[in-house]
Amino acid sequence: MTEASVHRTDVLVIGWGLAGLVAAAEAVAAGKRVTVLDQEPRTNLGGQAWWSFGGLFFVDSPEQRRMGIRDSLELARQDWFGTAGFDRPEDAWPRRWAEAYLEFAAGEKRSWLRERGVGFFPVVGWAERGGYTAGGPGNSVPRFHITWGTGPGLVAPFQAALEDAERDGMLIVLARHRVTSLTVRDGAVTGAAGDVLAPSSAARGVETSRDVVGSFEIEAGATIVASGGIGGNHDLVRRWWPERLGTAPADMVTGVPAYVDGAMLDVTEAAGANLINRDRMWHYVEGIQNWDPIWPLHGIRILPGPSSIWLDATGARLPVPLFPGFDTLGTLAHLRATGHDHSWFVLSQRIVEKEFTLSGSEQNPDLTGKDVRLLLRSRLGKGAAGPVQAFIDHGADFVIRDDLDSLIEGMRELPGGDALDADRVRFEVEARDREMDNDFTKDAQVAMLRSARAYRGDRLVRTAAPHRITDPDAGPLIAVKLHVLTRKSLGGIETDLSGRVLGAGGEPIEGLFAAGEASGFGGGGVHGYRALEGTFVGGCLFSGRAAGRGAAAAV
Image (cartoon, rainbow, N blue to C red; front, side, top):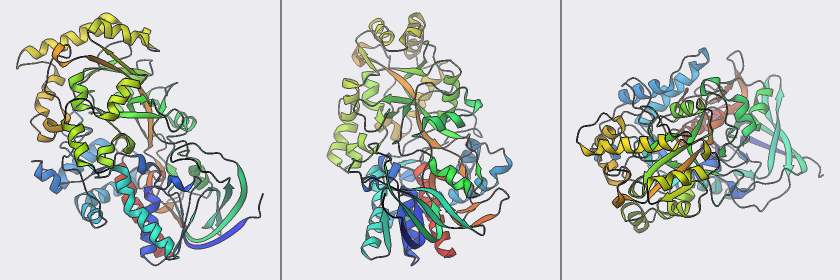
């Protein structure tokens, strides 16, 4: 082992995901010398955000107005607080962060990003539609703006700022540096110490070794923890799994790389930080096993349109309003009560062509590569998009058949398929299909489909014309086995609006700041119990900006 290396800096940023990059850029812009470190090789610069779809939540944007959507700060506030369900004393700062973030999303957020060269796909998506009353959870209007270039396009300007500062001698990047402790002197955090890990040439996202080859110490005027959440660590997910969501699944797929391990949360707590709302988390129920995995148990989320029939493991249809894309955590809680770790989509080829999108930058080469020709061909042309077709062809969770009986037989052949009641599946599909014979219906999902197509964005790229699932002209039939996919922590390190980390008594810890998922995307849980989508990378932007400015002002 080599002798410990010692560094000195104005601002130390732990973690080079989006929040860390934004914080570093803000500190450099304020004239501070910055050190950014991460336990991974430099190929992973940008962290989870690089892998993301790049969805952003805006309020009353030009894109919304062009699509005929009338939004307002008041409506967005109604939706946010109705979704968050803040109900704890420790929600005081998260409430303030929510108010501040809504002002940001309705105000300078879009122009601030446009100044940095970030553009947006013109069709606004409608995620987390809710389906309850106006004051309940969900987005009353479409607000999901896809970054042109997806996650890499969002990371790019902040990575460029880091690299410019590095060339100018204002910033140092330390790869393969894992923080194991924060240095505390007289109640103030004055830096960090930890292990230097063995060099790695692993590609982005691939799991790396934890072999230690040295140690380091860094003295810093201010330290920002931007180390992410716990989604890659199933042990921590299960440890903090809340009773209100039932028992944790025995089998899950993983929506983030293995380095999203939550280790820095305990390190920060040991330095006096107050961690709150750790039982609030955000996992998806539309996960599928990646046929070409990059990290362990690699799963991909289907971003479904609203037409697929959703069945539990026994074949019973999910209750209103638990339709695809309506209420992520409501659906998770319902499915956990069934005693099974999987569920099913049943749909037609016509639906998969129009409605199936896969989450992640690597699954959307048209948007990620800013390729207009490929986008028009994949989103508006005949046939499923290339990445979706690859899963249909190679994915372990897909069953394709020409008739319903054969489809059910194929579903029963997959692991766990023996729980399926064939008669119940047949009843659910045929009963739903009978509703298509009239313009009238008592089926809430069918009524919603017809209503959804009144929105141009849904009609254009997101919602298939309502039809019988079993119509031979719409075939073949497709069933998809769905798994719980780990993703986000909604709680974390409590902070004030400057990103200062707070102790158990509510007092700021001198020299310590936090941002991004490590801080529950702001304040220790800006989303409360549920999120409105497009607010995760947006929360990294906003909290990273606040922490970078706060840390710079403190030095």
